Amino acid sequence: MFTKRVIPCLDVHDGKVTRGVQFGRAEDGGLRNVGDPVELARRYNDQGADEMVFFDITASAHGRATMVDVIERTAACCFMPLTVGGGIRAVDDMSAMLKAGADKVSINSSAIATPELISAGADKFGSQCIVVSIDCKKTAPDRWEVFIHGGRKPAGKDAVAWAEEAVQRGAGEIVLNSIDADGTKAGYDLVITRRVSEAVGVPVVASGGAGNLGHMADVLSEGRADAVLAASIFHFGEYTVADVKKYLAEHGVSVRL
Image (tube, rainbow, N blue to C red; front, side):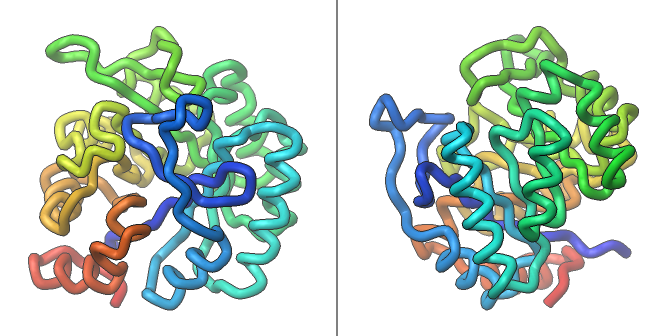
C-alpha cells in the first residue's frame, strides 16, 4: 500500500510567508504575514513533513530571484523533497528552480496559456518533476471550473477534463485547489477531489479547506487523494505534522511515521 503524504504549503510574497482566505490578494490587504520561509521549512522538516511546497505569489522577475534564494537556503538545511511554483512560464524558469534545489516545479496559469509547456518540461526533466496545479471553483450544481491568475479569471475549462489533459501532456502530479474552501478551514471539497483522483492515473494532492484532522482523513479516504496540502493549521500552531500523521495512522490511513 502506498503511504499518503502530508505536505505543508508556504505562500511566499516578497520573501515572507503569507496567508489569505479564498485567494485574498496583497494589494487588497487580504494577506497576513506568517514568517520566514526557510525557518518554517526547517520546522516542518523536523516535524516529519513528507514534502514542502513553495508558491511565489509575487510571480515577478524580482520574486523569482527571491525564490531561488529561498529554495537554495532551504535545500541546504532540509532533506524533504521541495516543490516550487508561481511565475514559472518557460523551461528555463523550471531549470533555474531545479538547479536551486527544487525536486519538482508546479505550473498553473502558464500551463493553461501554453499547454505545450507541460510536455516540454516533462520531456526535458521527466514527468516526475512536473506538477500541474489547478485552481477550481464550483460554478454550477455539477460543474467545477478552472480559474487562473490567482483565482480571478475563469479559464473556460472543466476541472476534471483539464486534469486529464494535463496528465496526457506529461504532468506527473496534480495539485487540486478548491477556491471555495481555501483558507476557510471548513473542509476539503471531497466531491471534486474524488472525481479528479478517479479520472487520472497520477497522484492528486488535495488543497484548500483543512481545518482539523478529520478533514485530512476524509479527503484521503472519501476524496481518494494521495496527499494533503495545508497551510493555516500548521503556520498558526494548531497542529504539527506529527499530530496529523498520528491521527491518520490511528484512523487506518497509511502514512510514513
